[in-house]
Length: 287
Image (tube, rainbow, N blue to C red):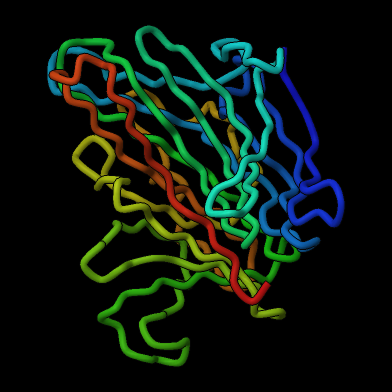
């Protein structure tokens, strides 16, 4: 079974419009949003959480914990996907989320849509499957279509980079590659439409952790290929499988796909009751 829906929010003069789905075990990519529009302009063709790998320091695992309809709880609205808005700082925000149980783990996947165009994907986790410290490595896949499916470009910002023609700190990434977060240089990325010069920043959260020997990179940039969207059937417990897609295709003026990994640590002495969260922010500019 699966669950589907469409959101236009707020109902009068909508800021956000998108469809969503929570697929069955054959498409274990969590709560997926598609055709995401902000102020009527296309931002994302598809965004999902296709892979969640768990690394233990002791003898447990590794595990790959897919999120799908079958391990999602029914929520207070009688469905497995909850859609609601709420007020914060005097502004209305929109959230859609699903809640999952896998063994001893409790996992909440959430997308929050803000009036200023910020989109915040989050994974919240609690629970302890084995009595050892562990890390959840959550992999989001963002298929950006800024205004349309073509002619996008990718840029990286570092505070140590001068102005080389793209503004202070920015340089263009021309080829498929993977990168690490670097808080010391305020590293972030942007996908921009080359014709309209509007786009979306991808900004790491300070709590998103760093790559390690188990999950060796933080971000992957790829040219869209339909064969590489495996609807959650990506990688193994021991290998995310993403480096195999990096064949150094040109990215400039194409359909850009970004994979982003947040590394979420749990300490065994918490007893599994502490909730932790990871996830970046997507912030539109010149919209």
